[in-house]
Length: 495
Image 1 (cartoon, one colour):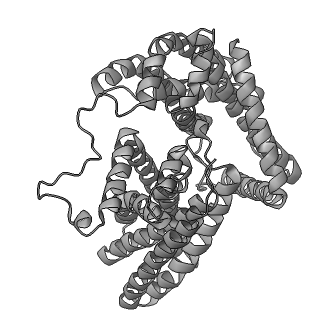
Image 2 (cartoon, helix red, strand yellow):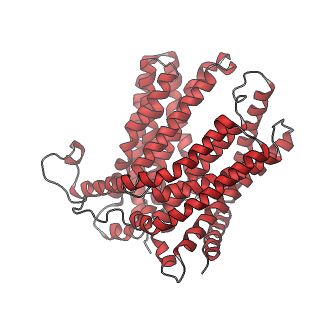
């Protein structure tokens, strides 16, 4: 077995899974493609108009900005994929037990991620070219920029792959390993920000960075096996089980009113989130969304769009989109994959005298740990930077609470109705399930927040009462999602 065999198996499985999803959901696939076209047309339209007028909203975007955005996107995707498909993938034991060297396994997995990311970038680039030619947009670009973009995607994928492997170690060792990776980030950012080379010179620099990344893979290969052991057995070495209830009289107020089985399951969920690094990932995600929302608010603050008839809606819409993105990712998608992430452990839960609604309720409550972070991050901070009043800032926090309740409740039902027990992806749902879930959440969020927002515009007091009322209704939706999802979970057959 060679690295190409490992790569070929992963690529074939992904191709077959994609083909199956397209056949199962042909209308959703067509609708998804149409939405991609519309979104691409919309963004290119805004960009082309911004280049034609002075001071347009996107006129200050440079090729260096685009390359940085590309790097961040594919770096984050690579970190997530490596964490799910490698660090926490117990099925890798079948590869490790074969008469093949460890580095072949590592490079096979890496080249699979490279192929997927380059293919995804090629599809995006092809879509941009198609829309540009169809509508005759004046979008600048050249041959060398395409080459540099591909190299940036490769650089982001490899560094994300290495970063995810290093990130599972304890803090001191993780910091020592990260110090070997940080110089690559510093060189990349400094070249794009300060030197600003172009053409074949920048392409040569990016090629050298990619070669340096492959040199870094030698170190990653030496710690790969240990990182995989830590990732698949995160609780190893802990002397006392954190699942054991402690009767020291200092239990949290919430757990005092919970049944013993719910208390143990909730503690298990919280512990697993901290051990697997989900909590840290949630904080990083929310910080990134908060920064992006503040950046978008500042970018549109001095544009002509704010001075139009309905320009006063621009900033609240940007803040609302940031809150929705945060609620959709955390706790939405984490709850959506919670049932599938159990894998074979679901057999234990199904064979125990525990109702499905109890299982889902503990997972939903554990997901609600993100409420203060979303309310404070995408909710309050961008509202302060946008110049909102104190009452408007409180209104934004209540909107965040409403969206979190909605996304959590809908995700609870979806996770039980469409679970993915594939342990190689840690229960992560397929793209069609994600798309349907996002559309349902968007519909409910618009229905639950639009009316209070417009009431707020005309009367702040009535608007505050309205958002409190709809937050209560959102909590009811979460409760119904848990109950209905529990009924679906009770009917699930575990093979």
